[in-house]
Amino acid sequence: MHSKKSKSITGKRKQVGGNVIKVIKPQKTRRIIRRFHHLINKRESICHFLCLTENLDETNEKKNDAIIKSSIKSNAILSKHYEDGKSQSFSEAMESQLLKLHSLIKNEDKLRDACDLTEMYTLLGYIMNQIDKLGGLETYQIASQNGQLKGRGGDTSKLLEKWIRPLMDDNLQGTALEIGSLSSENCISRCALFREVVRIDLEEHEGVIKQDFMERPLPKNENDKFNLISCSLVLNFVKNHKDRGAMCHRMIKFLRPQGYVFIVLPQACVTHSRYCNKTLLHKLLASLGLTLLNSHQSNKLYYCLYQLKAISQQPRGSSSKRMKINDGPGLNNFGITL
Image (tube, rainbow, N blue to C red):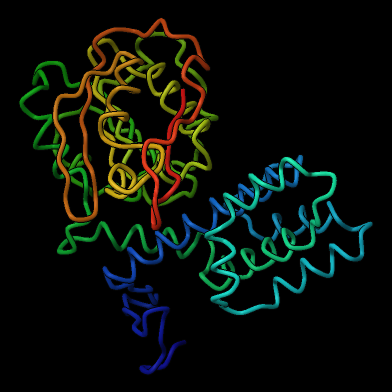
């Protein structure tokens, strides 16, 4: 039982019956989500460089720690540096190294045999510590759920409902798939435009099925496909540019002819990226047969609605090279390759 002075991550708790619900302020919600994405992306880059063969599980940090420890159990020096990294609290020096990680890996990749791996394992340990301090996926989910609460302007499907209503045939009553769903009470679930809304996420919530979209069985026939796929603030959470492209390819397989795809990204993905902007994003999705119908940029987010006009004949990997289109300090590395 928490006392009246008990505090959550933000210093407040909301009492609902016998349960205590963590409440995260909107400004902290955004900060937590951005920080979580940053750490996960840096960890993925290091693990790829270190050739860790077993994939990490973003839903189980204890398992991830065990995987990393197992990979270096016979190397006392690397194990020590990994543990040293885990013991460090927030450090400006370590954060600076993380920001330089892309160029560091690029340069050392050419001299892998001569590379001193201790720095990489120290950074990896530091990232693991920071993810743990942040609260892992549980905190990310709480932040995302709080961001969709009424009165916080966080339900991105409000704009989707506004755009899709004039396009839907009322007599059709089709189906929708919401990838990364955080609530069964959002606008698209309550708008009555669909006879069924299938909601999936990496974690189970009320009215939401626990399922990784990339592992969802492919449709056996047209009845298993959807009139609408919503992918709000999901692509930016996917580990790397190739996996994001794979997800885009896979969405097409679940879409009925003339179906719609709704994508929401942090606006920085298309305004402050070395490898992506609005024009390139729309060009890539057009190569999959998706035509842009609507788009909107807010202070924090970029919304777009596409319609499948033609099934793409483009083979996988035909646009697999990531091209730098911007450069400069403060840019991120978000990108998509098909």
